[in-house]
Image (tube, rainbow, N blue to C red; front, side):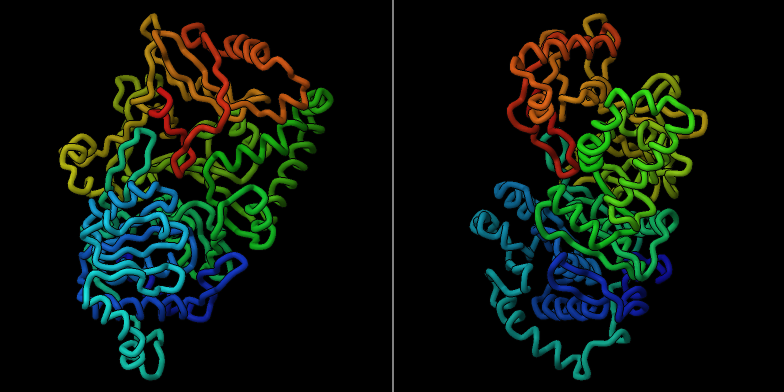
Length: 548
């Protein structure tokens, strides 16, 4: 792979060109320039070399988003080692399993995870590095212990005049080489190691360069977990190729913390999962629009435009006032909110991706996006619907192109099921397309239900109707003995404001209202109230398998 088509080469070039610019910043914490990042990477490369770590060896990372997580990750891939990012909120036994299953020699771990782990349950692990200061937390190897103790002296000896841009010398990869093993955390309960090659990472960066056009001086707020491909690719990796400054929250992203950060960082592009956007709209916008006088006003030509323009202006201000685009992905987006944002000409777009595609599959700029669609096939990607009538009858979405994974680590059966002989990745998602090539997702193949009269039922579509109700935060539709049951986590504040005292009667009233809005074969027979939010994946999709 030539340097102008090299994923690693993108960082060598960016570090040299943006040496003095701010690169990584912990929100209300430490900050690193691009030169600082390159110097820290070189120091870790010294440690790897002295530790007899070779390109192709596996190194795991588990910790909250922070600048030093980013430096550790980049040090692994630019050395030619294989990164194994692990979500920091995985349970300890899952972390133990992934570290062992991935054959990782080293583990970078954050303090919030370190105390919960038992190194005895990861017997093949040779060493553990603390993310917060890169100190050696555990070593089972004399070579690694000695390498860590000599690292600083060896680094100083190698660069007596200090590390400079001219000293950058990174691994030269080939397109099909493995770069990352990213373990999924899906709605089915099974964690698989996705094998992501350098070509997939490179093509995702080229896609982002084409559609996001960020440049030095711009800011990015990293909210999503970097151990997940969506946040990693479009809140971190792409930005570091463009000289952008990335701010990490370094804490649980509550709405208050997020909006405080938006006002101070004033990001240009925002990458979000639907839940974040939906919470904002439900709390700040929908209650106002549902008032009787507002409903009337929004139907009056001229007046409605003024109202929608003011809503758009207030929302842009809430996101920091500097944003030119918001990219939403990772889970299904509520159709009612999708339609509202489209109506007020809000600069958002809904994309579609998968860990197995590192992650992008479909995207369209907000100026041409269609309501309910996740866009058209992204750069170099082909998308097909396995249906005899793909514009009207949903079928499985399959994709092919440079972003597609190599397979699943040590799991040939799963690989064979997901990748066919012609290179098509079978996503497990159901969708349709239109005459313009836009893709519309209907749901998951595994979650599709069958009504008593044999009709295919997509629970996500019923849930979208339920979630549009003012007193509902989220819902899940399940099937028991041919009857559909809605599990609902209610908005208790809204119920209290409405003066509801009999929750059962209110839910029965709600059930009848929902059934008026959906076909008879989808009718809900019962509503069950959940006392707590549904357990979710890092993309904020509900883990359906827990509630079947």
